[in-house]
Image 1 (tube, helix red, strand yellow):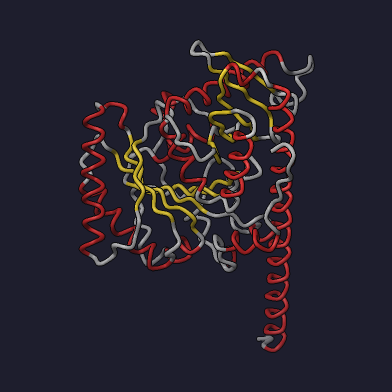
Image 2: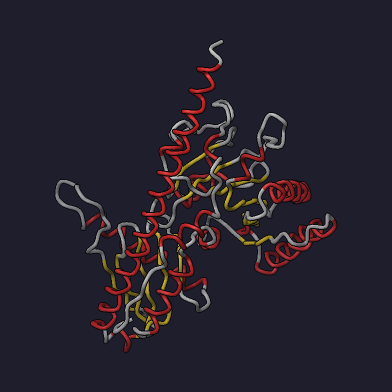
Length: 394
C-alpha cells in the first residue's frame, strides 16, 4: 500500500450496484398497525420516506426455532442464558440496524405461528424489497414440517424477487456431536434441494450454516449473510489484500465492533478459531475501555479514534487491533518478527483508513441522492393526489 494510491469506485458505479437491492415503491406500501409492531420502539412506515431505504433481512421459521434469540444475542448483546426467558414473538417485529457505515439494514422477525401467505398479508410487498431471507430450523426437533415451510417460503419469495439470498440456519447444534452436526446438515441440505429439484427450481441456491447462540457460529453465519448485502464488499476485500500483502500480515478482519460481525476479510480462508480469538479480543478491548477509558464524569465513548490493542500469543503470533471508523475496527494476525516493523504497518494502516473513508464518502453521497429521489417522488405523488382531489371535490 505504501508508494501507491488506492482509489474508490465512482459514485455512479456504486449507486448502480447499490440500487439493485432496493425497490423504489417499497416504502409507499404498509401493513396496518395491528399487523406490524414491536415492543422495542420500532418505527412504523409513516416516516420511512424521510429515512434511508435499507435492504431487509427476514427471519423466518417455525415457532420456538430460536429466531428472536438470534436477534437479541447478535444485535442486543443479550446473554444466551437470558434468552431462555424470552416470550414467543406474536407479531411481526421490524428493527433498523445501523451500527456502522456499512452494516445498515432492517431485520424483520416473523412469528412462527403467523401464516404470512394469508390473503390479508401482502407477501409480495414483503419479499420485493428483501435482500436476504434467513430460515431458522431447529436441529433438535423434527424438521419435516420446517422443510415443508422452507420450500413454500422460498418458492413464493423467488417468484416475487429472484435476487433474494436464501440462507438456512440449522440452529441449536450446541447439543450435538460433530458427527451428528454433519449428518444433520447433509440430510437437510439433500432434502431441501431435492424438493426444489422436484419443483423444477434447481436454479435457486440455498446456503446452509450450523449455528448456536452459545458459541461464535451465529456471529460468523450472520457475517456471511450481511456481507452479501454490502455493495462495497469487493472494494473492501481488495483494500485488505493490499494492506496485508504490504505489511507482512497473515490475516485481517474488518469488524463491526457493536455486533462483532466481520463485514470483510482478505482472500485467505477463514479459520473458526482465529475468528473466535478476534471476537474475544474485541470484548476485552471494550470491557477494559468501559472501566478505564472513560472520563471521571462518564462522558465519552469507550471506543474512539485512540482505541488500539496488542496481544502477544504464546505461539509467536501477535494480534493487533486498531480503530478504523467510529464503529469499525481492523484486527490483524501476524508473526512476532513481522510486528517489529510496526512503523511500516501503521503507515500502511493510515493509507488503508483513508481509502475506507473514501468508500464511506461515496456511500453517503449515494444515500443522499437516493433520499432526494424519494422526496421528489413523494412530492410528485402528493401533487398528483392534490390534482385528483381538486378535479373530484366529491
